[in-house]
Length: 112
Image (cartoon, rainbow, N blue to C red; front, side):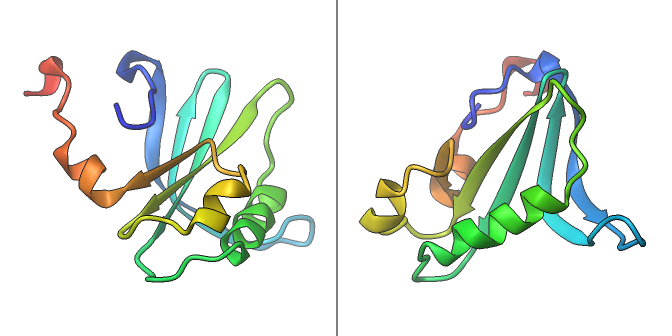
């Protein structure tokens, strides 16, 4: 609900690890949510001071993924503390969610 993804559109949601091969780079993603037309790359951070370095980190993961044509990738940041104003102003992440918000969002009625 925090991200705004209808539950019935989710194909899979799990941590993801891609092994390095001769053609692709390795990458580790905290939470990858797949829907029919969108992949949500969720980065989870517990650091106090998140700077724009996090954008570079997520961009590297994005480049390493082999995303099929016609699928959009949406970066999401889940953080323990509110992000800095400068990070928000970068306007890179589709959503920035504080852990408190995530934990306090009620489950859909189908999962209660």
